[in-house]
Image (cartoon, rainbow, N blue to C red; front, side, top):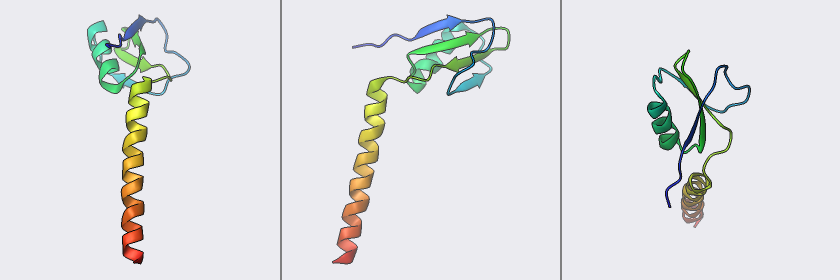
Length: 85
């Protein structure tokens, strides 16, 4: 399943965003940035060469992050148990 990135060209900076990057010159670069960081919607401001991300990230990326943290926490807990023995 391929998730498509929606790039919206805007004339002013959005009020709510979690991430922003300057130096993005084209809509294609904005799309690539959104794919790289797991955003489903990005807002491209061509006059300032900036891209802003919507607050919601892909659920699959959130699940992957949670799984990684869970594995690390389990390893830390097991190491602590072994040290107390």
